[in-house]
Length: 130
Image (cartoon, rainbow, N blue to C red; front, side, top):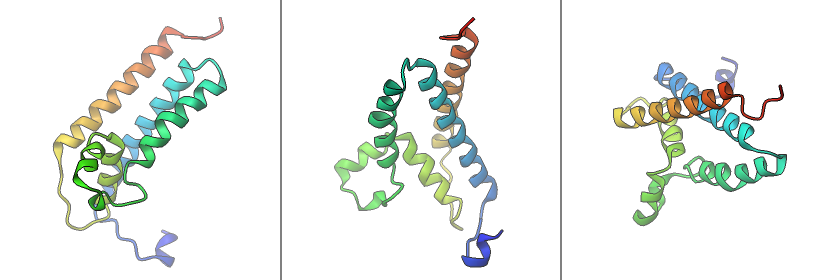
């Protein structure tokens, strides 16, 4: 509400924005829990973060448009689930929206899969002190 004083931002589909914020939080939170459970030291946790999470998130089209990339490299971006999180979140601010149910189903399956792994590790009590 306060940002609307300074910028002219329109939320054309508030439910879609909320959905993608929620699924992004679930996916990143579950990945953080899995990394935290599996890592033995802080160094191994940061190495996984630096060599896996950061490159995937930076190559998701967050800071540039994927339409300017050559066709050979564009195929690599289409296999990145973070690309779909970013692009679908952006589409919530547009008036003309095209819904792709296949992308939503893949993101939900990925979210449930990561939550299942996190819950399994937590219930198993992996590396928990008695």
